[in-house]
Length: 203
Image 1: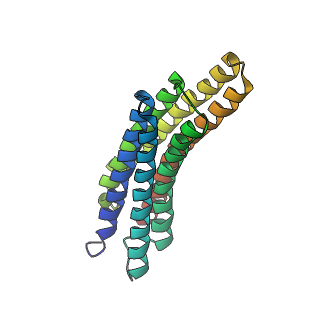
Image 2: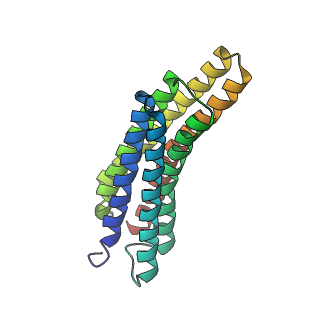
Image 3: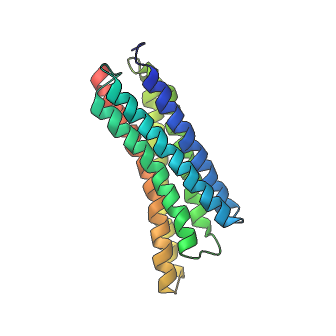
């Protein structure tokens, strides 16, 4: 475990980049100005996360012994990357769809997503405690709780959209946007569940 703690470090580096992207996304949604610059910055942050994922894969390929199963390291890394991919996709669509004003439900979802990322980051801070995982498991449960709260907000956002919006083009736009934000929150839960699976192998 001591010889391979490089993966703990690499995971935390990746989660720090995800947190930066989630914070940037909330800023974009909350302060919808200088939009093109903020969208471009989201692409930069997404690229940085991709590069970190490749760094982990490169280290994995060179390592004869790993902290846990190689396929788990690969799946967790890809899962983390999926979070930022979804956020960057939403940001890009703001430009493609010529969104001029952010709906309140989108901000609520973005803020819940940021909470999920923060909780998931805490999971990885405690990952070295995998053989004594009480705190780790508590934090995984918290990620799941936040994702459930996100589901409720997402469903309410869709309800509001289909009830109040009369323009079918706007319905299509915002349905896609809500789905992508929801996908980023779901990805947080997916990673937490992957970590839980690893814990089950080591306790």
